[in-house]
Image (cartoon, rainbow, N blue to C red; front, side):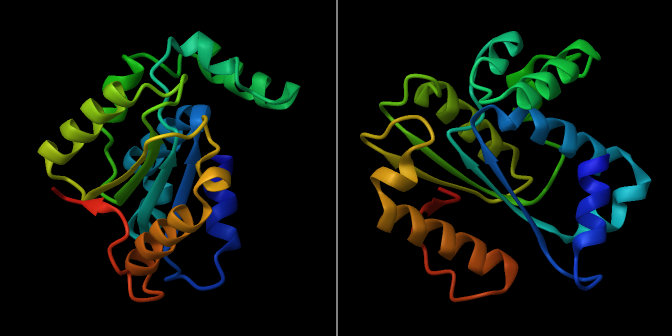
Length: 183
């Protein structure tokens, strides 16, 4: 709730579009944000402005307790640990990601060689989300790229895909297709 309240306060205008950018185990926080946007009436207006979400190496299909492993500092581990300890994961994590209650369009950036974000599991999630038809789903799969290093290893292609995706959804730029969408 605090993240969403800060987002509401930081928007310059009441109609500013909102995009979320999710990296790796940040999908756990995304799941909590999505639940609040979908169920908390205090954020109904913010939900109407949520236009897009970009997932980079996310979600990671792992046991929820393993999701704290990649946290870079004590604060991240504590926040993720609290989310787990407070019963925030009362359903299967990947099932919750497949059933994302938000209708914003999504871009998934991932790699066939990522040892943490299994591309077959992620592609099954992408297929299920596409079949659900609630939101346009785009993806860009890299052949070789380390976990959350796609920008570093494929800078031009990554930037073009993100710029085009967000440009189209946020009303800034041409939005030329740089990632496959909706197929």
